Every structure is written in C-alpha cells, then in structure tokens.
Amino acid sequence: MNWGKGIAIGMGLFMSFIITLVVIMMNNDTDLVSEDYYQRELAYNKQYDAQQNYMNAGETIEVNIQKDTFFLAFPSSLRTGKVEVELKRPNNKNQDANFTVDAREKVMIPTAMLPKGAFDCILHGTYKGKPYEFVQQIIVE
Image (cartoon, rainbow, N blue to C red; front, side):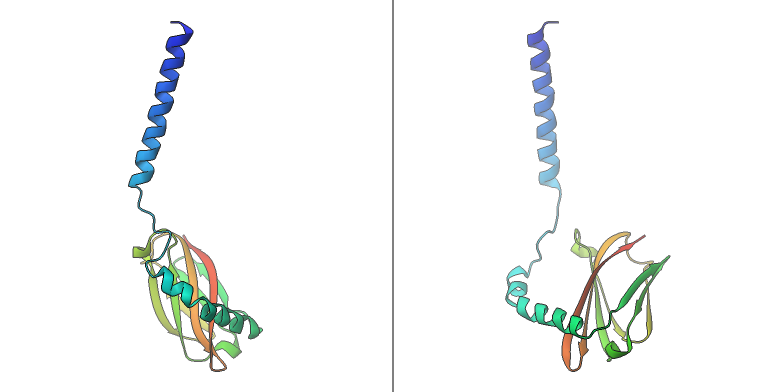
C-alpha cells in the first residue's frame, strides 16, 4: 500500500466520524431554553429582588441529601408559612418536580421517585411580607 491510499482511507474514516457525530448531535433533544423564556426575562427584576430579599434575611436555608431523602432546614426568621420547592432538571423538563411545604425547622422530601442526577433547587417563600427566592444546585444519587 502506498501513501496516497493510506491518506485517502484516513480522510474517509475521519469524514465518516465527523458525519456520525453531526447526525448524533442533531438527533439529541436538549431543552436548554425554557418555553416561556421571554416572560421570564421580563420578570427578571422581580426574581433579582426576591434573591436580594433572601440575602437580606441574614440567615441561610440548609440543604442536605442523605440516601433517599432531601432535607431542608429553615432558620427561625424564614419559617413563615408555605414555601414552594421547585426541583428542575437542567437537561430534561419532563423530570422536574414541584412541592409545597410548610417552612418548619426540618422538612423532609423523599427523593425515591426522582431520577438520579443534578437538579436546580429553587425555593419561593415570603420574608417580612416580601417574596424571597433561594437557589442551589443539588445532586440526587
């Protein structure tokens, strides 16, 4: 075999590899942007203010995952009624989960029904009559 045939075979294999990758990537469904993207952008200032309200509270919500349970520990100043818990998958909106819990000292949420992987944990509640928002990434194992 001479150099010409080897180079032609190598280029052919490389081109088929690139074409295979393009086909695989084009068939892969990823939800990188939410469907209500524009409405969320218009409400960004409200979201920012809610996150600032959480930071102004001076105390932090503790998040912990042990085995099949997701624990939330609310400080005394943030125990103000109902809190909406959103667990959002960055790569698959069909696996998102929403809960409404009472803000108590310790809240337990079972994670057995959740798929394993990363979630964005978003808590919405009220502090001194103003809405607050807490965001943290968690990993369910």
